[in-house]
Image (cartoon, rainbow, N blue to C red):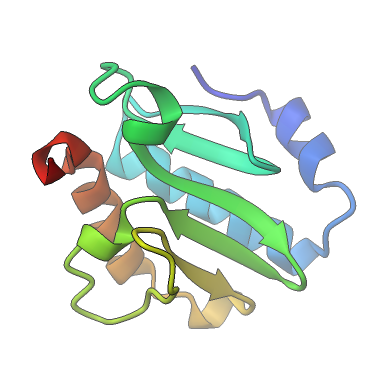
Length: 129
């Protein structure tokens, strides 16, 4: 299930154009990396999760989420602390969640994000028990 273009435009309507471009390009990257991904409004942003129900809905089966915060697009990985992150682009001090804040389209590490998205799509938090 994907959100409609109208829903997305309404959601981003008050954000700067450059952040809208980053947001939409990230959305396209997520859908390309995980073609059967599901998306829905969640936590003031948009959550992306596996459709197979593995792990239980958008939390445990979550891949990532996108939101616009204070002049940047934030990509959050609920289980980011367990991802390899070889480029060391994620930050955060919560138990498991890690994020990257993106302010400039030209500076977005597209390839590294694609790899993290694909890894997150394969991650099963039940393996942590």
